[in-house]
Every structure is written in C-alpha cells, then in structure tokens.
Length: 377
Length: 137
Image (cartoon, rainbow over all chains, first blue to last red; front, side, top):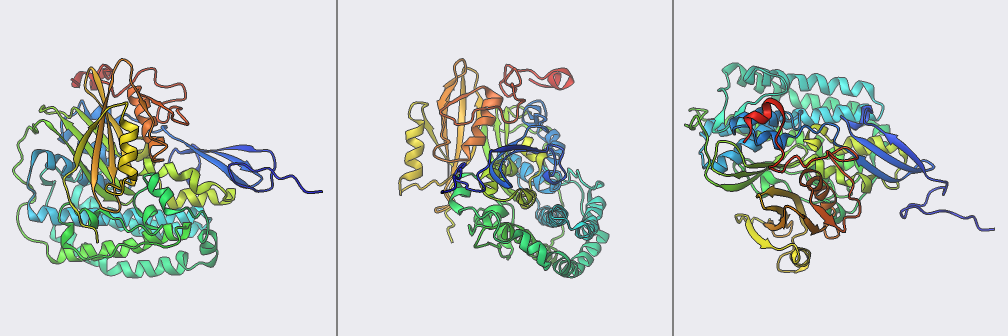
C-alpha cells in the first residue's frame, strides 16, 4: 500500500502532524529580541514567521520632537554594533538637505571610522555565528580583536559603542597622532587575526559542513523581498552602494565587492569574512591620503533646512540604511523615516527557513546577522 | 558597470491607479523596477501620503511613487503581490498610520502588540506624552 505523505507549503518531509514551536524572543541565537514561530513537520521547518516589535521605541516619532543635531545620538541606538555607519548616514542626509560641504579631512576620517566599524561588526558576526553553531572558543578570538577597534573608537570619541562621533558638517574631534599610530598597528595585525579565524573557524570541516548547501534561495526571490547587503550579494547580485551610488568620497577608493554564486549559508557567511580585508584596504588608502585641515564645516548653530524632502542611503554592514527626511522649514523634522536593512532582511526568514532542519534555523538566523535595535526602530 | 546616476524622480499616482501603475513600472521593459526598497507614509493633515521607493538593479535608477489617501478613511490596494518587500513595509505603515492595505495576505500588527497600539503613533494628531511631547510640535 502506498504510504500517504502530507505536503505542507510545498515542503514534503515525514508528513506528520504540524508542530508549532516558539523560538525566542529570549533565545541566545536570535541576536536580540526576535521571536520566530516555527511550524515543524518532524524536524523540517514548514513555515517560519518572524515576530518583532519587542524593541520598538518609536524613534521616528521621537525625531519629530528633536532638532536635527539632537537626533544623532538616537541613530547610535539603531544598529548598536555599527553606530558610526548610522551616524554617517543620518548626517549625510541632513547635509544633503541643507546643502553643507564637509571638509576633506573630515570626509577621510568618516571613511576610516565607517570602515573600522564595518570590520568590528563583521568580527562580532563571525564570533556570534561560531557561537551559534556550537564553537564556543571562536567567539573569544573575534571579540578580543573587536575590542581593539572599540578602544580606537574610545580614543577618538570617548565611548565604546554609542559614539555620536560623526556630526552634521564634519566630525566631533580630530583624530590624534596616537590614534593613527594605533590604527596602523591594527592594520598590520589584521592579516594575522584573519589567518587565525581561517585556521580556527572558517577552515573547520564541521563548521563548513553545517553551512554549505543549506537554505539556498533564488536571487530573484531575495530581490523581490527587498533584501540588501551581504545577504543579497551572496546570491550573486553585485550591488554595493559604495560602488553603485558612491556617497561621500567612496569613489576615490579602490576595493573589491565580494559576491557569491550559490547563495547558501556558507557564502552569506563568507561575504563578511572577505569584506573585512576589503575594508582594511579602504582604511589603508584613506590613511595614506589623509589631508590636513579642519574637521568641521561652518554650520549654523540652529539648523533650519529649506522646505523639502531628502533620501540618503548608506551601505552599512547589514545593507542599505536610508534616511527619508521631510522638512517643513522648521528646526525639527516634519517626518523622519528610516529604511532599516534588518527590517527588510527579516522578510526573507520564511523563505530561508522553509525546508531546512530545525537545527539549522539558528545558523540561518546567524548568517542573516539581524540587529533588532534596527529592525524595531 | 551600470553607472546611471539620476536624481530620484517622483511620480504622483492615485489610490485607484496605484496597482496598475506599479505593475507597469515593474514589468515594462522600459522601466524594469525590480525592487521595492521601502514603503512609508507622511501625514499631510487631510491626507496621508504613501511613499513607494522603487529601485532597478538593471538600470540602477530610483523612482518614488506617491499616492494620497483620505486620512479619515485610509484605504489602498496592497502591492505585496508585486514585491514581497511590501509584506513587511505595509504592515509597518498600517501599525503607524492606520492605513488599510486591501488584499494584504497577512495584515496582523508587525511592530505594534498583537491587538495594536490603540492609536496611530506617527499621525500628527497623536501627541507624545510627558516631556517628549512638550518638546514636540
């Protein structure tokens, strides 16, 4: 007699009754307060529904009651592992609105900081992924090295995580000679760190086996879902805003944009590893050409932009972060909307999880690299 | 390499024509807007202005499509059938502005609690309580 097999959402597994499993919001591998409702057929995921909003603080509403400079510290709290990139995106949006010119030295310092933050964010990502897949020691090494960058940021801005360093019209402080010396030392040490990750994590056979060939999604599906950043590039789409729509002075630097071909978990992971050395190349070029001069433009104390709308997007470690500002000519934004990369990237959780085993859900979420502070705004 | 750089154009549409317009922009070979990057809204008092931010990976062009709905009865067709990105974007606008997206397959609150906030926070008639509200307009 033919065995009757149930099919759920096009996923055929053992064909048992569906089992609903609630993952999160307090789950170590959800990187914050993401909750995922998993419908399981045996051990295979049939449907994964992300539930969010646990960290919703109403930043867009708060912005309407803040002046333009007052909102900078709030951008630190969006994606709290790449605050420099958020600061930069917001300040450039406001500068576009008021038509401000930024001094050359400040532009170079901004690039150095944004790329350092990208490295720090990806280091955290590598460690967290290793941790999610059971490699407890891997995380220690990447966090140790990330601390080096945080010390540099501390030296420049006075804080480890919430910098508010990039300001409208420039940056807060000039960087010191000591900073540059330490940065050069870091760049010299970085290849050694990456070799260590290669030997310890990336080259690990079990680690690769857990990621390779898992959760392959066609690129057009990800495009339709509005996915940006390394997750999209892993599926072979060569789209990086730093190259395709250069903002600031990014058109002056030579660097490669790593892209994948298969679009599995392994390539999504690998994109970040490869981006670290590309970011290091940008920093080295910026240090080489760092001009002397002021780091802050002459910006009026009270910023009153003209009536109008502006949208400015940056490539953050997670994808396209865009600020859409509507000005009514007063000192406060009439409406400020943030296009958060993690928010849209989480839209593909279901597509990525369908058909994978429950043990791989942690891996899928890890390589998606969500940051809930950003998704929930 | 596609390096077509144009300033973002803005196209005005109407709630009735929106779905057809966006379908045209996605499918017509002259436009090929294959990505919906963002859906948001702006409270303009009498009307709510919906903002659809399109991007084409093939031509590297941006386009913003706007459509205004009545604040008292905000209803518009869902575009989630054209781009899956709208599934999340429209739910956020629904939570924040109370816009009803007709035809959305899963119109539960996304950022709001399961039974909603009870108000629409990003509308101008909602004032923030406490000190934040006093600082507001």
